[in-house]
Length: 203
Image 1 (cartoon, helix red, strand yellow):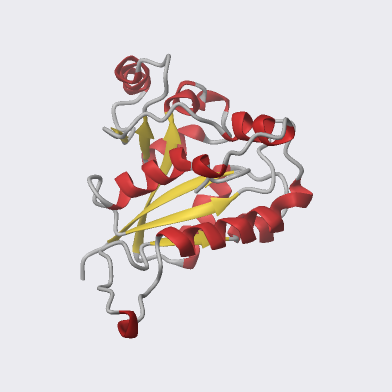
Image 2 (image 1 turned 90 degrees about the vertical axis):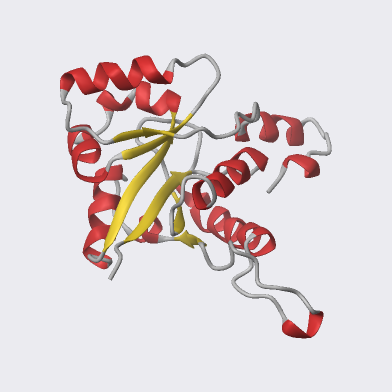
């Protein structure tokens, strides 16, 4: 039986926006992953400003966003055909149920223990790959799970990848030829705070 390839896309998703949507579509489209798990993180140990108390609210918002864009099924009575993406995106609360601190390697190990027949690959932006040596057990992440990396403005992905491969040629790093969307959750939160309509930017 073919091993299921799962892309692990972790983040605060505060909120989910069209940049996230473009990456998800690329992962289940051109990149060929069987599933995408959106892991809602309570709190990133390397970042300030996101309260772990908001984790459940962000999880619920992510579930609703995924239902809108990636329905698990469509009603036959409406005459709709089931889209190819149906059921391929799952919002996972595994980190919300894990004790702090929330290190990515612990999440990946917990997913592997829960679903041993699957292959898990961590999804991240070029900025995170450039900073990955600050991550707990980053070498295990790259050797045992691997990273699928999407471009970010101002980062030379090929150079960052080559630097890491010089450290260890067995690191599994794949570069995604994904659309670069110049938007961030921070920009959206600031726009909302100033009273602007950002509905067109939300997932």
